[in-house]
Image (cartoon, rainbow, N blue to C red; front, side, top):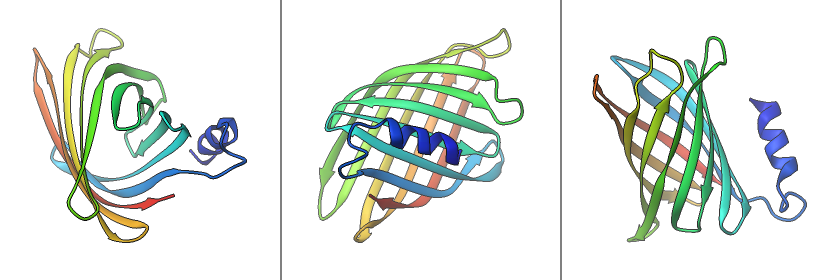
Length: 162
């Protein structure tokens, strides 16, 4: 994971200038259990960023276009073997309100790789609130809906704004 973040940082055109992004960590539900997670998102430019989401059972890579909304794409890998589990494409939007609060939402079509993972739609929402600069509290909820099942999960954490 550290090597991947280093490669993303080095590939960023703004790496030699000022680094901007967010590093967050906390706990999220995974079925009936809780697991720790770490998420790192680095801006490549004013309108594009890349993200790495690391958990005990899965790792995700994402690309986000747009400054306050746009398109996103992602790939999800299993934690055990590192094999590609699914790919996702969708749209996202964020709104700032109040004193340092940001609400974000993203909706995407998710395609399973292999016969055991069905196609689905994912719905996600997150609220981030500034505590003391540069720290933020965050909470989120997500649902993945397919013709087989609906999986609802949540997360809570602390973020550091770069």
